[in-house]
Image (tube, rainbow, N blue to C red; front, side, top):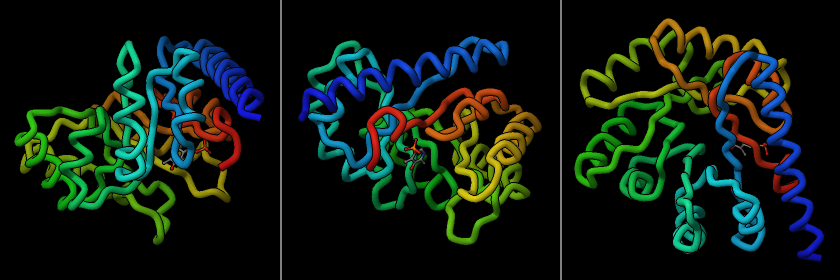
Length: 224
Ligand SMILES: *Cc1c(COP(=O)(O)O)cnc(C)c1O
């Protein structure tokens, strides 16, 4: 059983990679980072994907990531790059800064302040993204599109954070492309170069709109 799953995730990874390469070259782009989203999958499911050469992974919960990544990481060379793509509570800021190389979900001043103080304390500098609620969905995290410019100024000037880019999760029932275009536009007017957008169902469209980081889970690991 495990053998079959292993082969499946490795061959799925290969097809996702070639689809990314094709979409990037069609868009006239050099490099798109594939973040393999391993949330809910355990070490036995993740190891074959590491063995296939994948080095960048995403998790959406700090505690879950703490449970499985230190051991996986210790056994992997070249080293693993870990991205936090899920919502962050300020009481988890210390653990998040200690474990992750990138945090995609800065969306409140309180979180920005907690991250800034932990970065100083731990002398760590994860790459940072602001999450934008492009669909203005009340239940979803993220800064509202028309508040991003002011939020970016505040976290930069007041907390000294260096923000690399923006991240979004489009509403499930809408064409994602308009959300990708909106995110790209907000990033451009703020001089931000990195765009974290696109998941299993829409990463090619995201790349066409300028994604630099795509977050792909089920297309690699299978259904959760
Ligand atoms: C789970 C998750 C993904 C990956 O979703 P898939 O549809 O499985 O590719 C991407 N981004 C975020 C924020 C997620 O929580």
